[in-house]
Image (cartoon, rainbow, N blue to C red):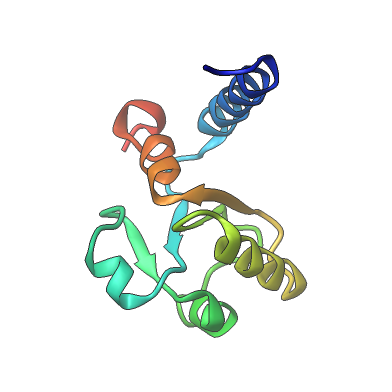
Length: 115
């Protein structure tokens, strides 16, 4: 049985996901910050693998503008958040942690961003 607070959290989570989905611009860069073995088990087709512990060098290697829309994901969201903070510290200004692979699949689906 779900409690009122659990339902409120679920509702807020759905609202936030909906708002982010509406804002994902076409041509956004999707980066999977998990390990190569996790990536091999499943990933977004448009995602580039750059493990979180090499995120700054990896992003520099693909020559992105500092204001390019970058969307990060991992298994749950923790590593993506560490990567997001590293990229912000490196001067990237449009970096979003979408959390898990499942959340990334939902946000990147063709029906939501025109891909």
